Amino acid sequence: NAGVTQTPKFRILKIGQSMTLQCAQDMNHNYMYWYRQDPGMGLKLIYYSVGAGITDKGEVPNGYNVSRSTTEDFPLRLELAAPSQTSVYFCASSYSRGGTDTQYFGPGTRLTVL
Amino acid sequence: DQQVKQNSPSLSVQEGRISILNCDYTNSMFDYFLWYKKYPAEGPTFLISISSIKDKNEDGRFTVFLNKSAKHLSLHIVPSQPGDSAVYFCAAVKTSGSRLTFGEGTQLTVNP
Image (cartoon, rainbow over all chains, first blue to last red; front, side, top):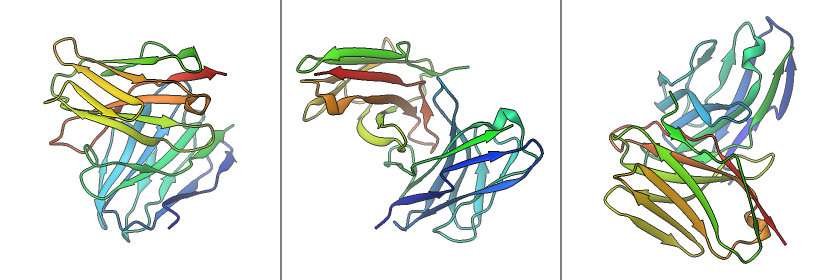
């Protein structure tokens, strides 16, 4: 049982490039989340999903897209990367409604946009 | 608009002493509160939580206190151990929703 896995661990992008951050969980969780953490700040919710085929915007969705074609995978797409997207990205999952249900986090992807 | 605030970016305590981490919130709709712990190069892990119908919840060395009138919660770690050195995030949620709102985090360092 690997929990929540994220790839890559690190990535450097040039301004305007695109990339996909991968996230997978093997706990059969319905809910999945993408957060970003900037230095000295808390985690901000980018997008979340309540099940395959259902996604919704979080607090800071601009510049990102997501899809959820399976229960296990929840990739985050960055189109036209900008320096403001330099951050650490965390994927998380929970079995049910993520407020009171424990969210399990992946190890993070550190992204730098130059 | 920072709805959950942890005003102390860092805290240093001696091993064996009590660590007290504080968190304030502004949204009176929040009714469930959580603490997560984060080690470097790892994702946050759940530590302890409390519902607004309680004012205290205890789990081993960790106790969370909630003061609803002051919109304040605190995490007490007794006794503190070097392995507790990590960043601690406070989070809040409306139980009718699914979005956690996190504070900025407090770096706890426990010195041997």
